[in-house]
Image (cartoon, rainbow, N blue to C red; front, side, top):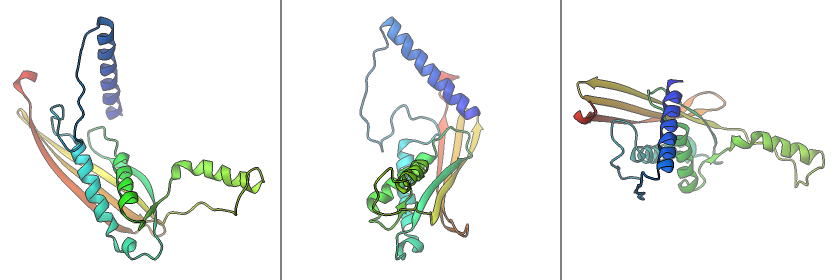
Length: 203
């Protein structure tokens, strides 16, 4: 709840500033196009950056596709994404990491693994019911595919503050769980440690 409150306050402050700029006709600014892997001057502190995001997803995708159950499968395993747990003190869209991994695997894994889109489960059920009732044409009855594995993960962090300095250790882990047996067949993590010094200007 606190993370959501901080996010809401941040959005409200940004909206208030934008409104003030419009009313007074000031606040002229400049927009730049940046390299996603490059750090900008605004990315200060010990939080995660776009560079971290891309590095984590690429490494995890490469690791996951090497799992024997995927490499040696006669039929591509079917995977569905579950929510990634956020145990840090920061607001992070953790699920976006898993979605980025999915994109990389769909693009580069050459069909070794397939992902199920459960966001349309209700619509697919309705579509199949309409086909059975003759409301829609069909080339044959189709059942929704069941998942062979669940992809999920967990984010954790440890913050340490001493004087004007702050250090944050991040551990971002992902795992692939057998949907039938609950056995974890793959797990990997990515560790990051960052330090930052608070400027005397902000004291």
